[in-house]
Image (cartoon, rainbow, N blue to C red; front, side):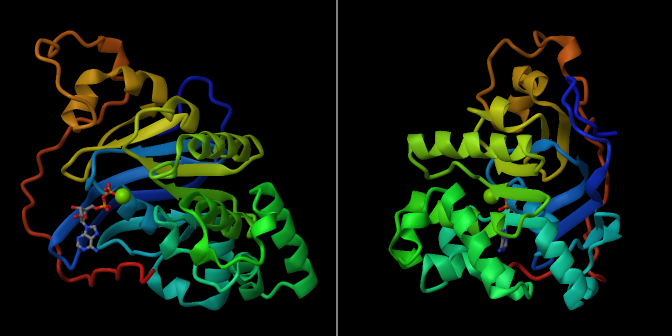
Length: 297
Ligand SMILES: Nc1ncnc2c1ncn2[C@@H]1O[C@H](COP(=O)(O)OP(=O)(O)O)[C@@H](O)[C@H]1O
Ligand SMILES: [Mg+2]
């Protein structure tokens, strides 16, 4: 249903899938409304939408930090529910396969030194200290921050903290990397470096899901985009290039300015995977199911 178009060399193996997922904060503030999407092995998928549409919330669901009020989330063929993640073995397996790079590195980086920060996850996994030390060095080298190993993360610049946060995720060698607004707040050179890194990681076999409202660089960062409406629903799901050309769609979800006389001018073949908005009369949100707790990051 949501395989990427355009001859992108990805597999059909579904790694992550949300089906009809709804989520409201405090059972009052809707963030996701009946969202379904699938991430296949090897894809680079962007969750695209205006501020507040629900991108970060969906990433937190995919990361197992929030649990849907309604609908299902399946990762690696197992349903991800709160009870299961309380099981240490399931949690370890899941957390080693799905890595999450937060938008704000300050929420992610907390150890006294960079080296300890990056070692935290693998030590928690029960890996031997010397294995961990090697992995940490490899990650820091890859992220070009080995020289910062003994520094305190909180003293680093934003770009350096971002590199450390990514090192602390890559050190786990996850199959799937989730990035929340990866290039936001970075200087231009660091943005370019990070875009290249994401492309390289994908070429090396990592599956990438990233949230963004930035249309620049999207052609490099994503094969496929899942576009969210401001009503927290999926408005479109398809290959990046045609979606970027669909001005009417992008305007309708508040990603670009509406053009005056453009209404009927859009190329008809371009909106291949447009999802028609359904008018569900359902005004009351289920309150039987307790809402998941926000990440305590
Ligand atoms: N902790 C929270 N408490 C209450 N509402 C929240 C919280 N976090 C997000 N929201 C609301 O949920 C909706 C989706 O937010 P979010 O997923 O952060 O959107 P995006 O990442 O697309 O900007 C927004 O309306 C936002 O105000
Ligand atoms: Mg966000």
